[in-house]
Image 1 (cartoon, rainbow, N blue to C red):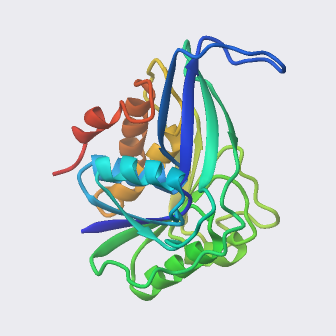
Image 2 (image 1 turned 90 degrees about the horizontal axis):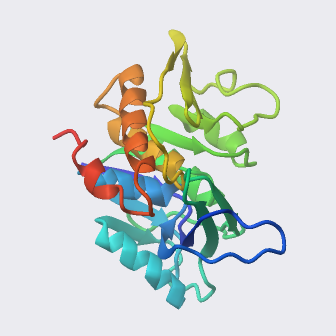
Length: 279
């Protein structure tokens, strides 16, 4: 079976530093790594690490930088469906600095929100769950509508409010947002989303459905790298849909994300996460 993930793919230049630089300051990095990034992309790597087929639908194109992202994804078992194979412009790029002592990070990026997006020509016929991050609006909406027509649950990574969400939310089964997410007007439950989950870093994850609400504690770990931890959490959530009920699903995602933040670097966590997959 396949988890389909639709959204942003960036090229991340990640430098680990002793301290984050102040304005106008130059610092020497402790290490440098290049990896594919973005919410749907890191979620796809997580799904593949947990042992399930992961297909990432995104816009990469043929610029040389896109090759870096494509190679990283291939090495980690993610299949890419590129909706913009003839695009000559570079993909979105993120410059990241991670503070060595506590894993705190700064990110400067330009996303792909202006890309028109489109549905790919073909989608796998064994998709059991879909995750969208909304960064390619037409793609997110098209994939979510396709999933609804085929009775496939849709998970939304709601990092920030985007205009497409007005149309997307009625198609979503689980909306997973950060504590900083703000909804203009009625809340997500009032907009018809059956399950709403709110993450808040190391603080408890809150959930709400028509049947109740609650909080799930996050494992206490020493964080050495928080970059992409939320994306990994969303990937674990999508992987766990259909395997666990909601509270257990959140506990599973918490455990996977906690494993990620204990490891420095964009992909150092992958071998440990492989051990957590449900066989």
